[in-house]
Image 1 (cartoon, rainbow, N blue to C red):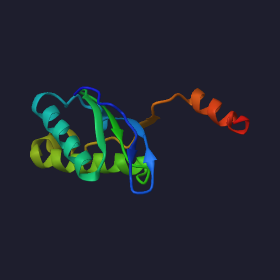
Image 2 (image 1 turned 60 degrees about the horizontal axis):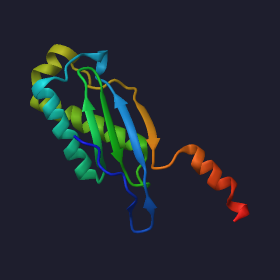
Image 3 (image 1 turned 30 degrees about the horizontal axis):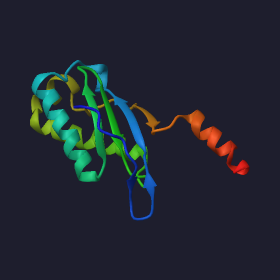
Image 4 (image 1 turned 180 degrees about the vertical axis):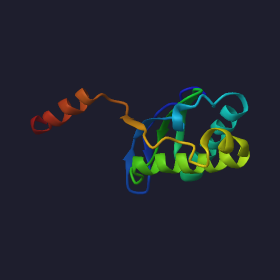
Length: 138
């Protein structure tokens, strides 16, 4: 998937450009996301993002972890985005690949508890700091 233009978006009461780089991995860091499983997980993330109003800007699914670059409205907490992505995708993957749960995850969930999330916009932190520092001079 190619990088889309990250532009300012609007809600009824705000303008925003909030983008999250999200990384998480399956339990036990199993190397499972290949071929059909990788394809189905990719589709699943696209559907989840569409259904919840997130923009999936970029994704890369590695055999033992994944990277997602997602834009979401300011009314949505980052932890809620990760929670929805993990829970819905796990249910869908286990539904489509029932043997995976028996052979690799012994009845437990698909995803490890941890994750990484970082924010990104169109300007650097340094630019924002200078802008705020110069407000009284305007």
